[in-house]
Amino acid sequence: MPFSGPIEDRLAIRELLDIYADAVNQRDTELWASTWAEDSSWKLPVIPGMENVSGKDNIVNAWQTGMSMFPFIFMAFNVGGIEVNGDTAKVRSYASEVGTTLEGVEIRPRGQYDDQLIKVDGQWLFKERIFHSMYGE
Image (cartoon, rainbow, N blue to C red; front, top):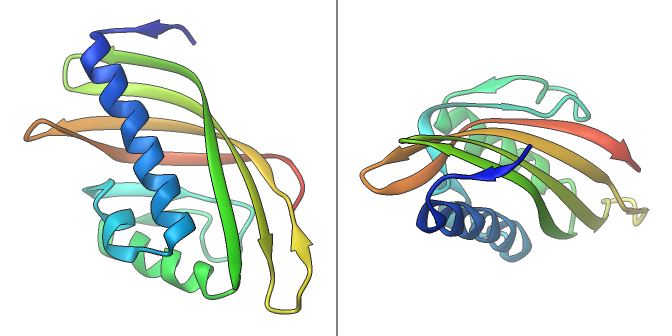
């Protein structure tokens, strides 16, 4: 996937990914929710019950439930590609995480996100996020 489209949009999309990761790391529900479009979907097949969650409110509720299973979590992204086409974009990124379960087990999942974004009132938001596990829990 190449990098294409206006540099301003590509920078704003990179910042969206940074905001998302920072919200995870800070456990900031309001900030994390601000990255999603109202009619979005999140496919996270590695976690039972989160294989396909639709609608921003449902996604936020699922995230809060998921976060409650990990007293510690750290997330970072590397971007593999961004294709901007007007008010839509496709993004591929790689997530690196480390966390601790409630039982004290350390996990280090790595995966790929394939995203569809939309620009709403000048702000890039996730329309669809699909996670593909590459390594780890």
